[in-house]
Length: 416
Image 1 (cartoon, helix red, strand yellow):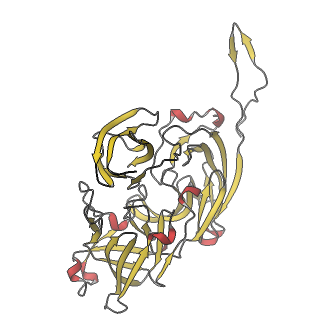
Image 2: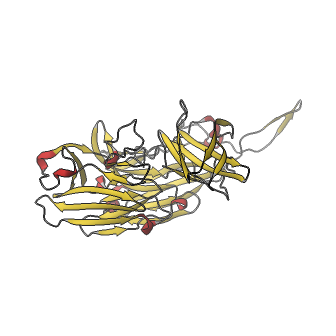
Image 3: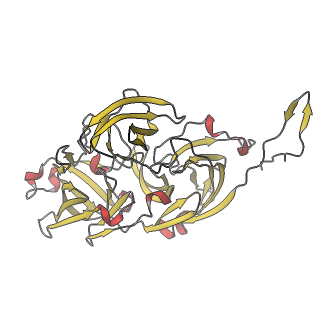
């Protein structure tokens, strides 16, 4: 048991004021995924559970934000994606003999799904399953895949992403049930992904609004000792950043200082390993001296730890949270004159939709302290511009400021 002294008095000695840290109010809450982890639970540190979705109700997830082209697979529910050696001209003859490697979602980067893994790292217009045309703004598919849903095999061609719609062709391996799908992003506007069930042909809106949640409790596939293994854990939303802190059993968590830790944008920073299964007691043990400092999308910083995990019988998680800082910095502040910036996160380049045309002014990136780290003049008649990531700029969240004689606009860029 950890014991902490209560701040009972303040001593004044020679003008020095000594005091013990004030106790921070912590709140307990419960998240329930259900037996067999049947639900994905979307959670806001400010508001608690804000939405649930069937964990097994979908097979593919399609990124929604403008120019986003990530396509993720529901590996935890038996979906396996195979790359093949054939290009799109080989659709009719495609068979299991053409498979090359299995492809998996990137658990750190939401924008890198299984179908994006083959993208050329130095080509910002290669999305893996196809290539983006800067002139037509159409991403055209150039690859064929085989998707296994348990024992059911389908061949898949992501034909194009045009406007707000993904166009797909799906068939059984023998060519039967050859079907065209249209997955429209607008069905789930304001979300991160729209979902497709390949067996029922349903396009699904499953998530709460992206601005409403911080983390999702969900089953997913993780590389454990080099082997893909189904786990259940916590993935963080795109604007959220987290620092993991391991304390001794005697340490007082109320003394944690957020500025002393590096915050990570990796979606699986919290992940699954805050618990372990104890064979002797046939139950899960939670590491209750492991804390997570979580900066939510509004810039608030929370202290989070887990107290109980009941496993697949109930899918019940008990957690403790405490608000450490309410005020957001300049970078995280919302703007009434927000810019549209994509992709999220960006890697080698990012695009900005300009607020007016023609545009003459400058663009500036700011670090977390509000200090300029890069600046460039802008002069164009185009409605948008692509900017190359400044050399040597570390991963993280940056403020973006666009200025002209007509006004000032702000936004965010996340580099990953």
